[in-house]
Image (cartoon, rainbow, N blue to C red):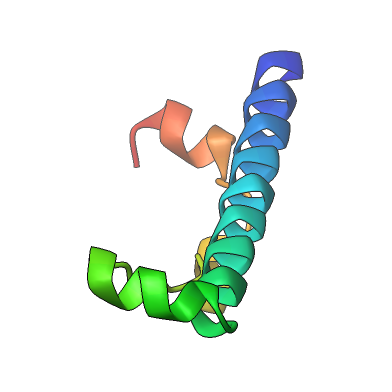
Length: 69
């Protein structure tokens, strides 16, 4: 259980880091004068990481998985 919590914490950190980096890139690509350079370099805005289904946010049912159901 401790390892699972650690992995979930690391995933949450990675999602936050990615979204922060995406936000910084999007701000740079859309702001003057860097947007001119970004256009010539082919840089574009990137989407944020979002969970589409609310059920994907729920923690897995480990007891069910261990039973093999």
